[in-house]
Amino acid sequence: MNIKLRNALIIALATLATPAMAGDNTSPNAEKPGTSKPGDVSPPIAQAMVDDVNIGTSVGSDGQVPADAIDDFMPGEAIYLTMDVSDAAPGTDVRVVWIGPSDQRIAEQRQRVSQGTKILKFVKSDTREWKPGDYRAEVWVGDEKVNDEAFDIVLARSARN
Image 1 (cartoon, one colour):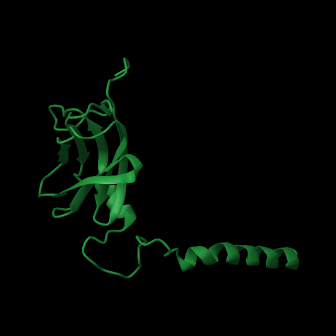
Image 2 (spheres, one colour):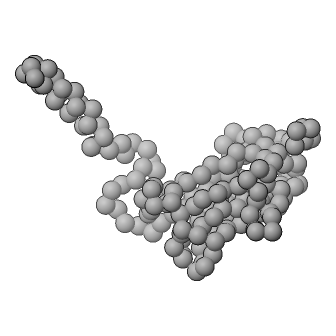
Image 3 (cartoon, rainbow, N blue to C red):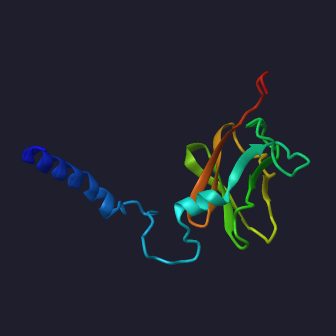
């Protein structure tokens, strides 16, 4: 291999690897390697603990919101959010943060996974005052966001729902 080409490749690889090795801790919520505080969970482990997150107007006989549930809700209608936590260890802290239009935090709910728990169910029933618009429910395991379910508050459902 040509020496100039080899040196150019080495410099290019070193340049690309330097930011990755340094880490980007500019975000106030950035993970800080080596810190050990309550709720500190690595992203891949947190992601593996939660599966099948669904949002809807009711739950089925299995205790879960069906995967094909509607995501348009009328003001005052209860909103159910379920998830499979069968891979989470007992004592794992799971929370749902309800966020409204303009990224306004509306509420937060927490549950701890108990021994043998397969499904967690969160219900937001006090939605009467929620205005029409775009909303979302963020699912967090410890200090890691693992899911983001978007939904709408509407005054009338479309014919397709």
